[in-house]
Amino acid sequence: MTTTTGGADEAALAELHRLRDSIDNIDAAVVHMLAERFKCTQQVGHLKATHHLPPADPGREAEQITRLRRLAENAKLDPAFAEKLLNFIIAEVIRHHETIANEVLSD
Ligand SMILES: O=C(O)C(=O)C[C@]1(C(=O)O)C=C[C@@H](O)C=C1
Image (cartoon, helix red, strand yellow):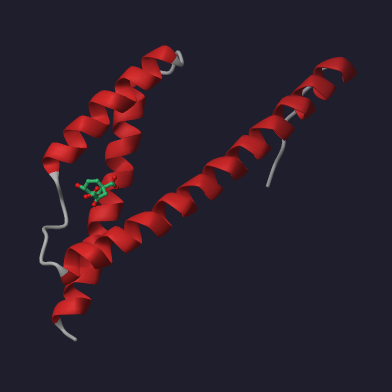
């Protein structure tokens, strides 16, 4: 890994280091929160598969997007980015649900 600090002075580098420490903490929190979310969605996947419910629920997704966009706006985060992120996560969840459904079918 390479790092670039150029000719910045000591104070600027200390500030950069402090900010990067916070970024690393936030990234760790995001990973842990996503891991918890996926633990829940794996359980949802098993529930859906064993009760013959479809992997995707577009109505629920529409509600989630509406809610998350509003939360993002209030938090001064780009709502379009929040929507893209949620869609990205949900697409992965649906993929997991499909895998679980295929496993349950082949049991
Ligand atoms: O709530 C569900 O039904 C889920 O399967 C979870 C989830 C999600 O990741 O939030 C994933 C797929 C659905 O289309 C909607 C939501």
